[in-house]
Image 1 (cartoon, rainbow, N blue to C red):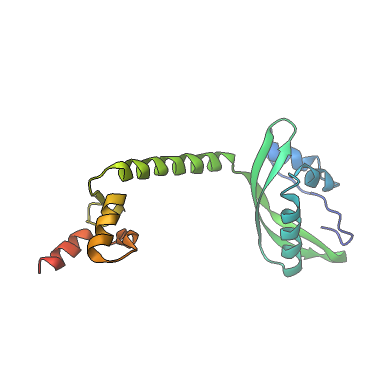
Image 2 (image 1 turned 30 degrees about the vertical axis):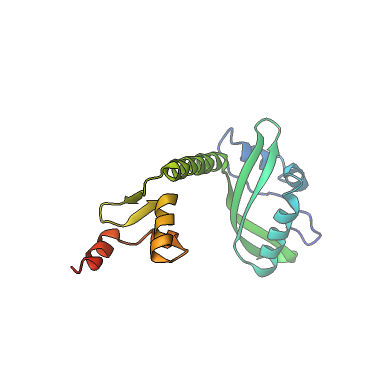
Length: 174
């Protein structure tokens, strides 16, 4: 980042064929090429986060989308550490990572968790899933309703994480 607000990427290391590296290499002298490829909705937040990092010399972390001419929209996360240089310039040392696969994995995991939760909740039986040590991992809606009706507590989800077997031992006086 230069004092006049312009930017560039003077040192770029990337593997051959890396779409992020290719996009940045095209912006070595003039960072505007790179920033113009950032999705318009993400650009203000990216610029603001970089400006804050430069002012405070705090580590920079940010997620944003970049439109690559051949790869389509990349979902990136960046992490870097700023350093003030002579003549009022600021240089970051860090990296950008394409997180599309992580995002798809996260979405698939959420879908799977939603399916499991809705399957459990569809049962009228009281279901409580325990780990080997007796700690409650999950309960269904029938279990939560039973707990609320009998214990008088509205936050039946608080049972998740407690040891059911220990509670049974306490209730039986052992």
